[in-house]
Image (cartoon, rainbow, N blue to C red; front, top):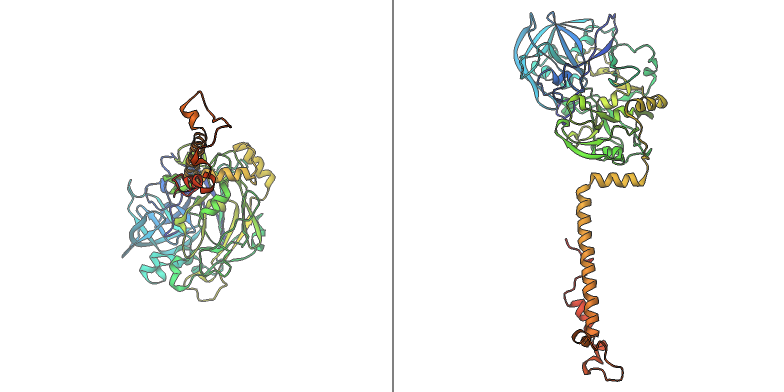
Length: 516
C-alpha cells in the first residue's frame, strides 16, 4: 500500500509447486530467527522489516537471473524489488523509488529473466536495492500484486517493459485465467498452524464455493486518481456488527459513494492491523473490561489494549454475506513481535491517518485470515488487446464454525465472561477511554459541591446569628423574653426584603453557576 498511515507489518508469501496453466502452492510459514523489533512495512530496514513480525514469516522463492530471492507478496503495491546481486541483469539507466507506508525503496531499475511460480518472463523490470545491514538483507525483496496503475517502475519506463510481474504473466499466457487467490494461515491456530496457499488461475480443492460467492465490484478510480487505485470494494450499509450484536453506525468519507452508509475498504496483505475509523474501533473494544486506548509507538499510534482472555466477536458484511472475525484476530498478542507486555491489542486499529478521499478503511491480515480471497484482474491488465470483464473480488468465509472457534480460543487464551451489551461495561469503557474528561469533570463537580456546602453553612450561620445577637454576646441570655418589645428596626425587616437582597446581590455565588 502506498501513501498510507503507519501499519504493523506481518509478511506472508508462499512456496511454489508444479503447475501447468494454473498455479497452486502452499504458504509455508517459518518462525523468524529472533524478534528484535517490530518494524512497519516499507521501512526497508533489514530482514525484520519483511519477516520478523510476530516471529512469523511467510516466504516465496522467486528467481531473477538464476538467483533465488525470498520475497513478500503485497496486494497493496505494484512493483518488484530485490536486494542483492542479480546475475545477467541489465541496467535501464533509470532510477525510481517506491513509497510504502513508512519509508521507501529506492534504486536503479534493471531487467532480468524472472521465474515466478513456474512462469518464465524475459526482461522483467525490477528495482535493485543495495544490500547492507542498514538497508535490506541480501536475497530478500517484495513483489507487488496490486493494479499496474500504481507502478512507479511502469511510470518511469513509460511503456509495457515496466509492467508488473502479474501483468507480464497474463499478457504472455492468455490461457491462464487472470485471477489470483490468497488463503492465509494463522500461527496460533491449533488445527492448522502457519499454513496457507496462493494460487494463480486456480481455486483450491475443497473451496470451489469461492467462485459462486457474490462478485464485489472493484471501485474504479477516475484516471486522474489512477495511481491510487487499489483492490477496494464497498462494505454493506449495515456491514459492521460489533460485539454487542448491533450495527455500528458509520458514514463514508469518500465523496463519490452514492450511499454514504457504505464504506470503501482496501484489501492489503501488507498490513497486520486493520486501519479503521476511531468510532469503529471504539465500538469494538470500549466495553471490554480493562480495555484502554493507549499510544504504542511500535504500532504507529493509538491502539486499544485489551486483556487477552476476553473473546471479542466481530462480523463484517460484503455483498449480503456475513464474515465473522476469529476472536484470535479481533485481539492479538504481539509480545513475540517485540511489542512489550503480555497484553493483547485490537486487531482493528483506530488510525485517522489512514483516512483518504479514496477509501475509508484498510483491511489487512486481521480480516484476511478469515476469508479465502479471489482477485480477478479483469481489464486491469496492461496492454491487453482483448477487452475483459470488469475487475472484481470474491470472498469465502473460513471462520464460520463458531463452536470450534470458541473452543480454540478458550484453549489458547482462556475464557473470562463478559456481557458486550451491558450498559455498565459500555459506561466503564467510555470512562476509561475518556479518562481525562472524567477526571476533569469529577474535579469540577467536587469543587462545586464543596463550594455549595460552604455557602449553605455560611448562610445558615449568618441567619442564626442574626436571630440571636444577645446569645452571641451573652451566653447567659440567648433569647429576648417574649414580654419585651421587639427592637425598633426589626418590625419591618420582612417588608423591606433586606435579607433577600443581601443573599441575592451581596456576593454569595450560586454553586451551580458556570465556572468556565
